[in-house]
Amino acid sequence: MKASKNAYKPVGMAMGALSGMLAGAAFKQVWKRLGHDEDAPDATDEHRTWGGVLSAAALQGAIFADVKAAVDRGGATAARRLTGTWPG
Image (tube, rainbow, N blue to C red; front, side):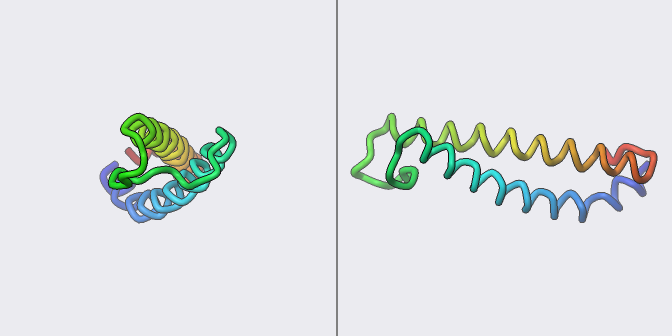
């Protein structure tokens, strides 16, 4: 089992990068659909409120976690279908 886990690591890393890009694009779309004309506020933007900064960060974190979990789970499922063993 250890060999399959080690063999899956490079695949998992590549999928992690892909999930980050997908999550970033998803967050931008959700932010726009919520009616925001501007980009999400940065924590150091002095012209944004605490509530605005924290709510944007919470939304972004939730989207990133959800996309990462979906991509990781899909990759592990695909690996099991291809190899017959779960990579975790």
